[in-house]
Length: 292
Image 1: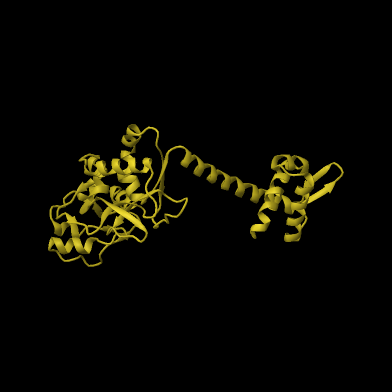
Image 2 (image 1 turned 180 degrees about the horizontal axis):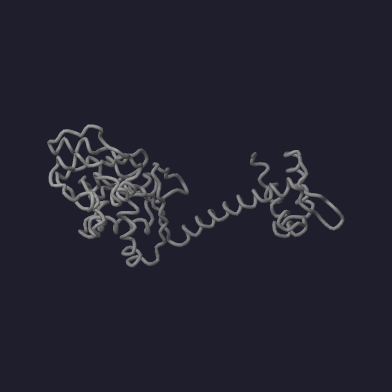
């Protein structure tokens, strides 16, 4: 829709809600004739009548009702987002972008410690597998897993990781050697390093047929392994809680250091706010604490 029609759409939405041009005009701080003009402009652009006009006022046509339902919902959603962004900036907020697996398995279990140390800071956590853009209005910070270099971003090393084979206690029963691991159904995610590299480090031939199932996220692969779907080569940082509560157990074989690591990133063209700096300091301390 052309941007020139947006004021007309706003006027129509208000008029449709009130079923009255005068009440819509009062809400929008316009005159009733201005609201009528906006509605007629919209009707002309669409080629349909949106209201039936009569002596006692106006009533929506079927076409008008269809547009009113869609426009009202869309404008309410936009207003909700705008209000959330305003609240975020007003309330000492920090918006952070993280991968779902990192958020669920490492960050979220620790967040209570941050809120206790910084009770006035309001966090907004975005979990997304894509590399979200840090443009104006976007996240203040991100936690990324990679080599530490991303265009337009300043990165600070957070922590490294390693890979270890794990499985449910039931599947792991009777698994005593790396050869035994190679006979299990193997799960994989889309991480850049996996079973092929691990078996090479273990000195064992990569099993014929390779992985049986592939999941798009590390959190999903951990949960799939916990219910016995197969063994998974898990990141040590992300699997600690599953191992601690017995949902997964460690299998025989080496621990393989990863080439990638975790970094805190922020746009190079703007300094982190005081609240964002507080979060950076806190998460860097968490990264070196030996606790889950």
